[in-house]
Every structure is written in structure tokens, then in C-alpha cells.
Amino acid sequence: MSQNVTLNIQDKDALELPVLQGTLGPDVVDIRKFYAATDMFTFDPGFTSTASCESKITFIDGDKGQLYYRGYPIEQLAEESDYLETCYLLLYGELPNAQEKKAFSGMIMRHTMVHEQLTWFFRGFRRDAHPMAMMVGVVGALAAFYQDSLDINDADHRRVAEHRMIAKIPTIAAMCYRYSKGLPFNYPKNDLSYTANFMHMMFATPCADYEPNPVLVRALDRIFILHADHEQNASTSTVRLAGSSGANPFACISAGIACLWGPAHGGANEAVLKMLDEIGSVENVAEFMQGVKEKRYRLMGFGHRVYKNMDPRAAIMKQTCDEVLAELGLQDSPKFKLAMELEKIALNDPYFVERKLYPNVDFYSGIVLSALGIPVSMFTVIFALARTVGWISHWHEMIADPNQKIGRPRQLYTGEARRDYVPVDKR
Image (cartoon, rainbow, N blue to C red; front, side, top):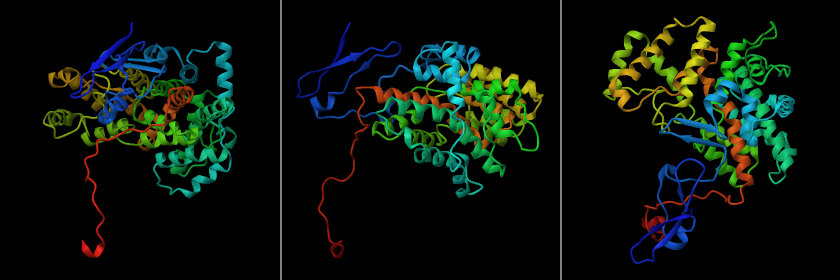
């Protein structure tokens, strides 16, 4: 049943705006004709009340703590699926059958190597360059090496570019780590799984065989699944905005990586580890949490801008954290005990409960990544690796959307009105 919203504006005729209904979530008022009819803009800093696009990929209900990929609850995918199967789901809308899954996995793994000349790029970076700085530059440079997949109007070009990025970004991420450590690059081993291959490229050395631990591989694969997409967040919106201009997909994903680098977006789990280091020991937790209440300290890894209930990814990540620490014998490590004391207080103290400051996915993922031997400087790179498929899926959807236009937000101008130029000798 169609609905309209009537808007009454002084000295103007009443304006009827249609209401659009999605499968799930709030209805949306269609304001596309608002400016033409009223000669006014809407004002929504941060776009927190604005639907910028129509999408069939991911749904979030922050009040209920729900996250669905193509309708599938994240809890089921994290427990039953694997990352490449989740990639197929996000890209194509359905879970693959056995034959489709095998073909897709084989296709991705055949693209894992990068052009050998690309390795020379790293010599131009300072040895102490941040891995995300290298990621932004090298991923953007892929357009210079794979010019046979840049025509966004060609479906085959788009498909090849999408597969290449899912395949090659783990290779590039591992190269960023190896370069920063002064270690030789490892070539992919395509007989390994996607995530085990990434761990091989990260941690293997030429002087010894490396066997990825299946418990740790599964933990990292789960991290990839949990971070694969998260609706129209800042970096995804950046990819869509860049793509709306017709930019090539490598440039769009590089833009998403640059946005993710911001500490307010992709740096949350890194901030958790820094917070734990600053607290120092379990004995200091009570004083720290009191300082949080008095606004002397910031509590990182608790609460979420979108989720006003429990982050559905957090419980999965907590289970993963327990599994990893048990496998590595780190349950009694001082840092983990400190983290668990923080969690205990936050879940029981009325101050934090009333404000719904529950542990989020970043609180546990930072601990897990650290336990896996991944340095803090690489945390956001891991996030970018996992989120690549989400960015690509949204880019793919946007290109096919007949209603898509180049992004062009408007503004409320509060600067000087028109004034005339004054020559310098008369100022």
C-alpha cells in the first residue's frame, strides 16, 4: 500500500512526498524532488537520517542487535560458513552449491600472485612506513598493472577486477607486513585455503617449513567473515561515492582503504590494545573505570554507534578469543586477565549497563589478532582485507543501479555574502 508524507511550508503549496518501504528496517521518505519543488535543501550532517542508496546486500538493526548478509544472520555464517563462501554470497546474492563454491574458490586462488614489477614499488617506501600508507598506494597502483579490467561498462572487466582484488589484497597486505619487518616476500601457495595462504605469506620463512595451525586459521577466517561488510559505513560510502564518478574499481577500493585508515573508523581494535597497555595491570582496572565515569579516560571497544544493544559479532568474537587463547596457552596472560576484568565491570556496573556500553567486536578482535602474532600496525590492514569484498559488492551493485547518479551532496553556506575585490594597495 503506497503512502505519502505531506509537507506544509509557509507561502507554498503542500508537498506530497512518497514513502518507500524496504524488506526490513524503517520506511524512507523519497525527497528526490524536494529541492525542485521547494528551492530548499535538507540538512543532515553525517547523513545519519539519510538513505543514500537502495541496497540488497546487508541489513543492520542496531536496536535489536541484528546483522544479516543477504538475509543470513551473521551468527550462522560465522559458525557454518567460510570466508570465500561468504564472499560469493555477498557478491552474487546466494550461497553457492558445491560445484559453484569449488569453481569460485579455484578462480580466486588462481589470481593470488601480483605482477612482479609491483614488488618494486615497496622499495620506494621508507622501511618504517605505516602498512596502511603502503596499502593505499599499492592497491591504487593496481590500475596501472591490470589495464585489461578497467572498463566498468564491460561485465567481464568488472568480474575479473572483482576477483583480482579479493585474491590479491591478502598478498599485498602480507607484503606490507614483510617489508616493514625487513623480511623477504613470500609467494602464495594456492594449495592452501584462502586464510591459511594469507597466514603462510605473513609468517613463513625460507629457512623452515610453516604449517598453519587450523584453530588459528579458523579464528582469522571468522574475523574476515565478521568484518566482510557493514552496510553504508564511512568507507563503503566512500567507495560508492568514488565509483559514482565512473572511477576504475582499483581506485575506488583504494579510496575505501584510505577512509578506513581514519582512527574513528578502522582503528578501534588498535585503540583497544593501546588502552590495555595504558591501564597496565588488573590492579589498575577499577581506578580506570572510575575515571571513565568521571570522563577522565575513554573506554575503547565498548558500545557502538549503530548497535544500541549487544553487537551480534561480539559474542562470536568472544568465543573465538577463548578458543585462540586456549590453543596458545595464553588464558592466564596478564593482558587477557586485564581485558576480562574490564568486561566484567562493564557488564555488571549499572553505569555501563544503563548506557548499553557492551563489549563490541573490536574489543575481542584486537586481543585475538595480537595473540595470532599480528602487530598493532597491521590491525587496520586486516580489516581492509576482510572488508574488500563488501566494498566490491557495493561497487558492483551501484554500477548496475539505473537510479545511481554521481554523488553531489549540498551544503548550508554560512560564509561571506557577495563582496567586491579590493586592490592590494587599498586594503
